[in-house]
Amino acid sequence: MGSEIPRIDFVKKMNEIKNCGFVPALRIDNTGIGFTLETLLGIRENNYTKGDFIDIGKYNEILFELKSQRYKKIDPRKSKPLINRHLISLVTQAPHGGLSNSELLAKYGYSDEQGRKRRNLYATISADRFVKSKYESISKMKIRRNRERLFLVVNNQEVAYVDLDKILGKLENLLIVRADSELRNCNCSMNHLHKDGFHEYFHFNTTCIFTGFDKEKFYRSIDEGKIKYDLRMHDVEGEIDGQEGYDTKHDHGTGFRAKFENIAGFYSRSEFI
Ligand SMILES: [Zn+2]
Image 1 (cartoon, rainbow, N blue to C red):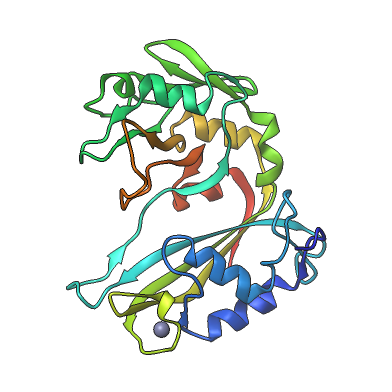
Image 2 (image 1 turned 135 degrees about the vertical axis):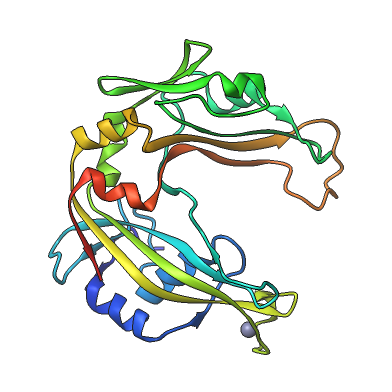
């Protein structure tokens, strides 16, 4: 692992990748898309935390954060493709003050409904309305911004907060690459990449380059409910023996997420390639 940030001509490389059409995933499951894209771009081997790469082409010397998302999902076992409209994760950020993630889980989480020995806390919290939830604590959650600080509010009580000015640096310049995903019957030798005989292939065909982050518009987007604060975590509940066959502990953390369509709203420039 080098500590130097990679330097690439992004638009040139991305056009080459796009022109390849469908390419096989280099890792299985959810993280396969990001791993495959970063490997193809040649930016995998770095542990720089402030961004993913610096452009040396059209966006000369700009530091970018890269996100990827499956868009159209083609599974030959299903009658038609599925369109993925999930929120895109912008920044992962645990609370800076108030209750920690594990304290939030202990206080507002709920026992797993499928009988797994887990306590879960999964909720997408908005500033403009309460979430619909059968869990009482979650149905009373909102986020509320006061200047640079965003509070998680439960039953009108501020229970945790994030200092927004600490997260904004990561959003300065953002790239979102969307791919069509297709499960293919595959007999390549990489068996560890097959699931039920299928290998996932990606066509990285849509890229949006967002530059000129606008803090005031970002704040307004939070206030209008276009940016959500997402709670996504679970932990062991009860006695386990390590043979559960599901993950008993996972902290996707808490973070900021938005619909693809709403992201351009807090940048001054967006370009599709
Ligand atoms: Zn294969």
